[in-house]
Image (cartoon, rainbow, N blue to C red; front, top):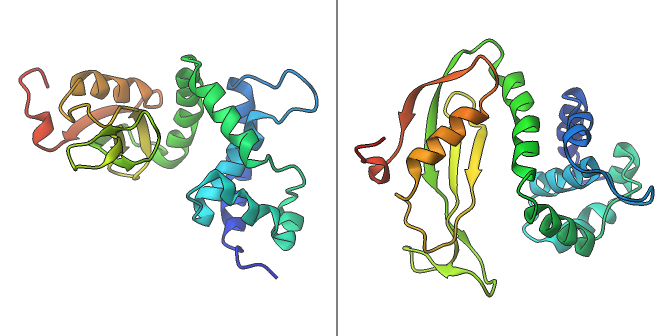
Length: 204
């Protein structure tokens, strides 16, 4: 018995989209045959997020669920410290953004099908954090304020610009819109843009 049966549909969707194959084609592989593949980290993090996890230590929920582990063949789950080390290592490599874009483009294409024009929604999204380098946001919290671009027709994230909490939401929005446009799958273009008062700029 498992209370996480809903994760079966997520795992099946990832398999149908050949997500592991796509991830391993673009992200750097481990330097030893004992290391975890990039797809194993992604699969773990995706399952954790859909399970409702807020911390890396919540990996123990999946590790302790024998029924779920048996059905999804979760024999190799990285520990919380291993997940953290990998995320920090990937975050220090600027080429990771290009790898993420390549993988995400295939996912966007799967949902958009033959759609050639889309509406882009962009907005700053506050992340409250207690890290030492977290800055004060305009909402009076310590944390970060990444700019996120969504495709209105599907709700999918097309691009993200990770920003410190004290970065004004109106900063560099034109460059981010161009980043979103470049991150769309081939043959798909922007037909409209939705943005709040932060986007009321002559250049945009």
